[in-house]
Image 1 (tube, rainbow, N blue to C red):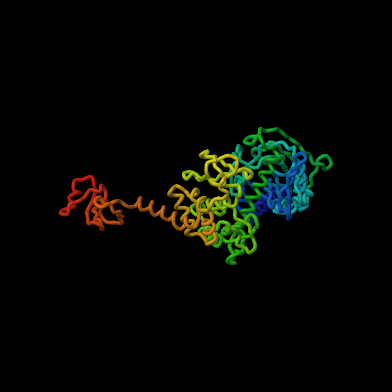
Image 2: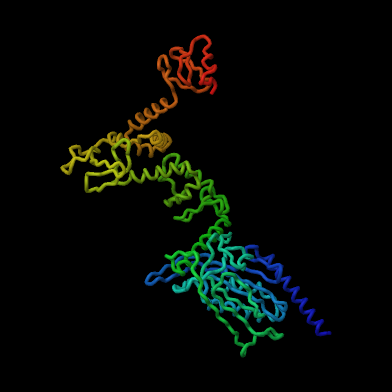
Length: 527
């Protein structure tokens, strides 16, 4: 009877310690790191190993060597189940899953976790395991600053480390994307399972694992099996490569996934960090900032937006650079689009292309007025041919190509060259005039050199005025004076000759009762 009471008290004490430990883990880690199985004393923990500065991942491919610096690696997945006599007599049953460690390395980690439990003398150990995996994994495996990926590893199906923790062990779980960085499910997973009661946890989709089944423990928590040696049973089977590009080897696939994971986690870390804007010197979270990829300088979105909008509006697209003094780095096009919106970005894209073409000595423009597209020519030749309309012309006089004997006109004036290059569409002329009218003085001088000052100040404006008048006015049916309707009803009176007429059909209206025209007519007086 006394033995039963002692056993019951021990079981109750173990149960209470398990509950206290799980509650502590739940309060320490977030839902993305720890998930508890409420139906039993079990759960899952994701542990990200801490990396030293300038940590590099290396992949050897024959004679070539690919290496990348990483700040984050995918986590180790620790799945555990607590037996009834834990922590007094038995260690937790657990499995370790990781995409970038070999089976031998996982075996060494699992053995060390078991040793850590034995060293406690029957105390709770899960938090100590997590701290060890987080702080000492790389050092324990003699990985200091370089992680060499095996170049001949087979590719296996694996559990999705990006899925929620509670779903990672679900059978037939399909790969998914989650807040853990947005990367695809990690391939080439290796899982090591160890159990204190020969009842390992199950992790879905694992095609290769090491199962650790030590013998029964004595009351002192020791492991004994054939003189203290642990028995390791290795099982392996191959699985088809589902959904993997045929052009990538397993190691290349793993490397790409490590890079995707690192990029996603780096973005998350940047978003949660406070930076001082280099323009207004106010602190902002990274989620409200932009970091230029070339130089690494950080600015708040508001300041960088105003800076880019001003430069683009003035036509100074070459000035869309880093606002930092003496820094010529430029933001990425995607960053400019995000900052200024589609309308200004369209102008930026057009002006940037135009500016680039203007600076190229081997680019001329097709002299046909309905075409006017850029043409690349050989500088050793005087001939060019438009790839769109097929027109072959002399690059000196812009006339039909007249052979190789030399052009009688050795030069051509800027106005003549400009007249051939003027846009022929209404939209093109509007864009050119807007660029000239709102551009900086430097931009205006550049356009004047290309199209001619007289053309920019006279011809373009006149063309636009004529087109606008033609589109927004009608002729008086009596004296043919151009009239604009800016409001009111459709009964009009010409200010030149005094004739009343219908704006819709241009019918002359009588002096008496002119509104009778709209009664029972197809013309409406007020629409």
